[in-house]
Length: 318
Ligand code: FAD
Image (cartoon, rainbow, N blue to C red; front, side):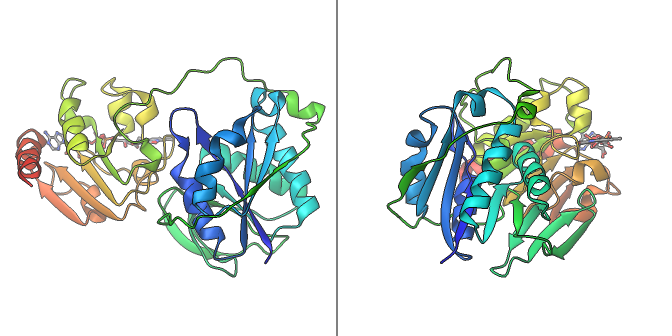
């Protein structure tokens, strides 16, 4: 069976990201999954158990200080070399900021097509893809070269399939042009009690209607009761109610959870771009005409300051 390369994403705080486990699950339907770890020395060893648990038949370890110390360019270079040498059936990446940038650079290096923001992929390489800032969902296929596909987190249910992968070191020789942008500082991600926003199966998000930073406690409370992550609209972030890294939307993060709860969010197109592939959407808004209700599966027209505490009480009883 042909190899399918899965580009691994991991963080120090959370280990292998859930989206990588989704990609390994998907890769098994196309061929034989090989995980590609692109990181500093020792990166692969720390991730091997998890990758094996989800069916990686082989692990390519491309490890060097340079891979770790420069931005994505060296990763794309080493990945292109690997694709040339193993001729995989497909390359799967996470449709995250980094995943999309690697995918684009890889496609250019290989003179290949690329599909990003996929929410599904058939065994024949046909991707279901979100296009035009979420306004359209299309079926697409790479017609030049092999499928290079970046998949949005939460598109597939990860299923374990224990394997016993061999770890194969990959030579890393970044070009000089890869070294134009260097990592100068790292801020360690805090592992709080909540799941990571883009990986969470429940997201509870607040907008300008939440009205203050203090009142975001309501949003956090519901998120914690549901075991979810907290998100925010840009208006809420710009008003200083919640930190920028939690912004959902076109210029924020893209989420696709099982459940998205929008509290005091109007549903502007730029916000929808980041959340409209959520499986179930619940909205609370005091304006019955708010566009978020066009999208919502369930909606409550009311003041969130009254509705949310009542909802929290109900959830607590269950
Ligand atoms: P508003 O539109 O002001 O809506 C607040 C809602 O709260 C209203 O519907 C109101 O009825 C309701 N409300 C008020 N009080 C209550 C209450 N007590 N109880 C219940 N409901 C209440 N936005 C994003 O979110 N993410 C992005 O990434 C993003 N990127 C952008 C990029 C560009 C280039 C541009 C131009 C804009 C972008 N925006 C983005 C901004 C976007 O256009 C909207 O301005 C923003 O999403 C509005 O946020 P909001 O819904 O919280 O606020």
